[in-house]
Image (cartoon, rainbow over all chains, first blue to last red):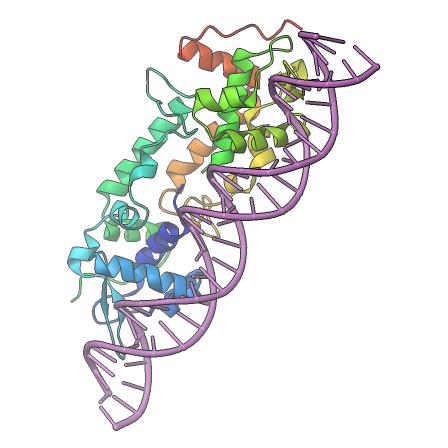
Length: 148
Length: 148
DNA sequence: TTTAAAACATGATAAAAGTCATAAATAAAG
DNA sequence: CTTTATTTATGACTTTTATCATGTTTTAAA
């Protein structure tokens, strides 16, 4: 479904949201270690996100990645769109050219509701909301991202 | 989610189930044309399925692929298992190492029910049942596969 | 001026997807 | 029978894409 890059990116961004802010940035190597992601690969991915203003970075000593208030308002869908593009959500689960309510594939009626719910969540929940949900679910003490 | 090979295979097998039987076999090129699948690639995939007794084939003039009664009792999950393996159904949607009800990723509660329903259908419905469902949904005149 | 960190460019590796050539089998025609 | 045409079977090969690695450059703070 999602590419490795997208998965890495999503997990990394949620991590950044929970563990850093403008005063306390976090390096890509640290993130890679914590999340068991190949460091160079993650670095590259985070650069793409930075270029598209989905996350923020500062170079130099004590530099690193963090999320600005605008960044925190982005969604996981923005991340996926940036890295994988959007097409994979538009295709049939079994690869049929036509697959809709009139000409459904055999799993269409299972897949469509899931996809819709998924897309709704990915598109409407902000990164900070998602990060909070993750922190709550996993009993993390997420830092307050609102201090700048 | 599924590889191209698996998608091709599933669609091809359902096609074979609907359009051929032991007396009226169907060639891989024909299937490839009808389903807009690269012919050599599909041929290769169908051979894998033949080797694992998921479909049947006869060489020579008027040869081709068909489904024996035993073949028709297989499931789409058997096809996927044969081609992609089974691991992709066991991993977190976002690639987290641990993802369960206690430590869920942010889409776990959306993904799990879908996956369970999907697996149930893929594992319990036979190929012939799936083919009939497809034919019914798409208003096809599927041939009766029970004449041998 | 030193140093730590991102940014950038490029290359390596691996896996997936697709192609091609040839062999083997078999039914039907002569 | 023998030949021929048709069709699957097999393996080598190419292309593309995804993933991972390395080295160099730039930037900013101490």
